[in-house]
Length: 178
Ligand SMILES: CC(C)(COP(=O)(O)OP(=O)(O)OC[C@H]1O[C@@H](n2cnc3c(N)ncnc32)[C@H](O)[C@@H]1OP(=O)(O)O)[C@@H](O)C(=O)NCCC(=O)NCCS
Image (cartoon, rainbow, N blue to C red; front, side, top):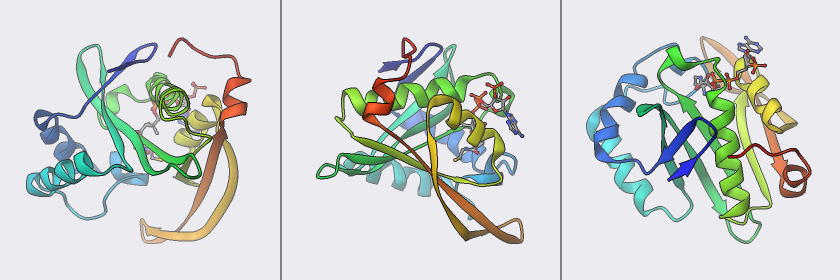
């Protein structure tokens, strides 16, 4: 279990899975995130089993005040280059814009540097996802590249931004208690 300032990150358990089905059916949550095909419980269970066995992946359920509100974690863990991709979402949209995403990301990044011994943590975000970009910049992620017209959503091509934070940048930044 990882404790942020306000969120708690726990292992994902099978009882969490129905929430993911509900969130992945919400077009507001999916505007700049997640699968573009409908997800059912069988697919979610298959994902759960496969990510449990995947040594390149570390995922958490995110709780706030005892309520499961979203999730986040690492994929593409590369031990040779000490890098990984981080991703996160809050499925309960009534909890958006309260600083919980920043808290979750800070907690994940601290874990990535302090326990996974990463050197570089990067993420991908749609260029139109201004809420996410603002949150990621506040946590310390730096935009480093733009993949033009990388994905098709909402009936048009969307640019993707790559952002990253390096271990020495993180260590030089004032830390929260996460
Ligand atoms: C993106 C997400 C993780 C951010 O978490 P969050 O808890 O809502 O975000 P936070 O409250 O920590 O930070 C959001 C910041 O963006 C600001 N913001 C909100 N809407 C904004 C907009 N349209 N433009 C610019 N900034 C915006 C907020 O005011 C806040 O800034 P502040 O701390 O200076 O007040 C969450 O909203 C989410 O999961 N959204 C849906 C799925 C998604 O897009 N996931 C990310 C995929 S890369």
